[in-house]
View 1 (cartoon, rainbow, N blue to C red):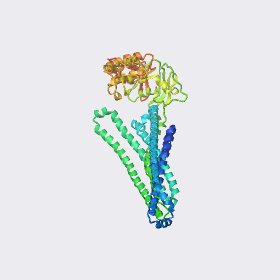
View 2: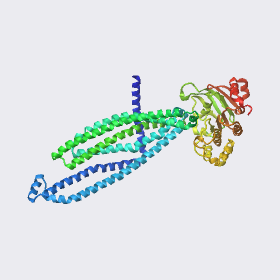
View 3: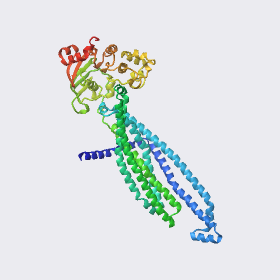
View 4: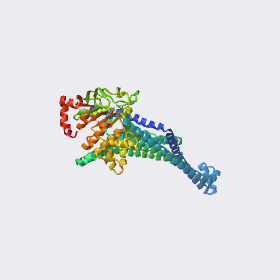
Length: 630
């Protein structure tokens, strides 16, 4: 019972949150006042033209009926004409005039109907075009805002959210919201104008007959509200399940080689089938609900039509209602039920848009754990002195610390080697220097400045990074090397490539530096990708250099070439290296040995071999096999 109550409370909270999110999305319309006002005015004129047609049809029918009677009287023998005219309350002298003018009146009314139809068509086109342009512009803004926000969000946010879910929000959720803003919102406005205008005309035509159908409307609206309340959480669940499908698809495409290598295609197919089945079940659940809705709409519409046939027929028989008025009333009655039919689609679009708006603004409102202070200063030229003062770090600000009371100082130009077993905190340390994460406790200082007091952009501009997992982007090799400096000259790009021992293999390709690297660098080997990544970092001419096991995927000869270049380029730069090779360790000015998130030893190789059992164990188990090469 508690679980049910908790679920209900959560559902009410979600309902309260959803509507403001949709309202915020609707306020984007104010950014395009001309398109918004233009679409609304065009819609109003097109709807007004639509409302005028039944009145014109009444005029046509009444003209035909009246002049049919006139002709019948005038065809009678002359001595019976006056008697028939008196019986019907007609002026015999005007009958022939009306009959002669009837063709002209029909032509005028017919032309008027055509003019209104053309006007309605033109303004409907204008309204449709402007509403689509409006919704596309808003979708453009939302996708840009989402992309910019996702780019700025700290790593901790991405650690907790799947890529597939983020992609769905930037694509499918934005599209659903765009559809509502471009179609559903104006459809709702049209339904309101059409229903209001129709009811005003019906009351002006016949109050008693309008009162017959009026009680049907509240029933229809209550019915739609109930269905709308049921539909919103269902559509939100559709988006969540669609995100799961996208996640499975994205993971399999990214890891296709692993899937094939482990012959896991059947298992991954089953995993994808499960996610697709979940999505199908949810969509069918929604279809069942809306399949129940529309028969109710038609039932209510038919009840109204039956009431009009009965009471309108009696009024004609009693002579209080003309045939033209009855036909006009019947057409306007259709206009009453058209908005009711549209309401089903409007509710469907609104439910989807409401769920999607909430998911979009969840990202746009997400708190960034790493961001610039309002008074953050720009970090100008630095010497490269890096200090960790009692630094403790926890992921997601809870749980056991990954780093605990880390203290060390890297002087300008020094090379710091970080050693330790997997999970000891090496990568976390280098992630804290460029503020990928912020320390939970303590300070990280660069040239005496707490890095939280300087702008992130100016800090990272002074740092060159080569991560353990090499990421290249679609484009040419040159584009990837110049990723951080797109305006770099060819000579600068080539110099960086030579320094990273990449120039020779690049020139072996037919297109040289213009060679396309393929998706995620698929056309390059692991070692080639890492050398391109190293060249990319070196082109930035960084004051602080971070190499996260950056030579792990190259052969010993290539590593030797890279290391020679790095040794030269590290001069005057503070360098942090996570290395698995003895050469880096032996050349380091400081070796920091980590174990379970703590600094257990630090010094140079000779000191640690003599005084640190942990270092000696790491050296013999991981590094000693390289000693001959060194």
